[in-house]
Length: 321
Image (cartoon, rainbow, N blue to C red; front, side, top):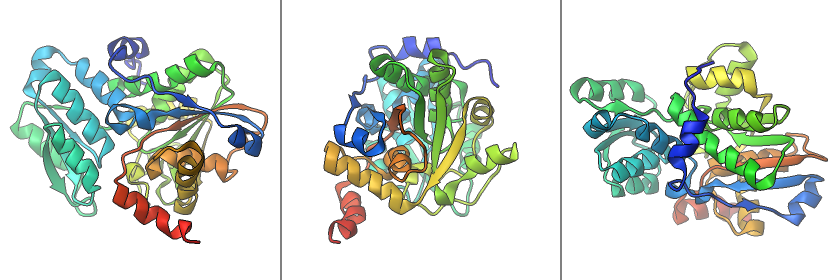
């Protein structure tokens, strides 16, 4: 496992910068599941997702002269926005490689923070190759969306806040894309409670992390066909995989329809708007994919970046039933 993941330094850098998002409670949810559920509302973070924590920490950790040359990254949306905003705060240029089918709302938000967008076809091209081409021409620094020690360390502050607010937890349920959030969350959780059970949740069609942990090696899959665009990763990273091997107890999967149950629940009963990826962890406990009975459980609602048009498109069919 990489030893350069400095949780304390990330906590110090993000103090007073990251928003300390609230923890939501629900008597109905507790009674339904027979558990004490603590929902970490990270969809209310700056730029609408937990990604701001990792992006800001990684950029802040750079030497000022290196940072000033500029940042490049690749992302379908949430990390893109986070890097663009963090670069804007430091007043340095940012270039973001985004798939041409990324949600238009996420692209527009990224551009609004001043980033330059380079598009690609995610089904025919590799975003890593495009980023490398940019790096060969520019003296930028790459801040990848999850496979970076400082990105992982930044994400850890989300779980740290949850434990500070809610106290000891028996389980922590986290949505999984490339593994940055769950890696940081697991490290932070196990500093507080080494016995806390860490469970990741992936879309059923995008279970690259589940397969990787089962086989003991990094498994790469095709681009997943899922409404959870923030979880359309094809493999975990080497840093995140190493952490997950040591600290994650289980990965479960949910269908797109179950994910929408999570989105629907948050809207109906919590008056919160989450994107599909953001509701994925909650979807798993609503679908009884994880035994939470009798436990104090933390669930991270990881993102809320969805346009009104897309939200209505996804939810209208079930509301008409």
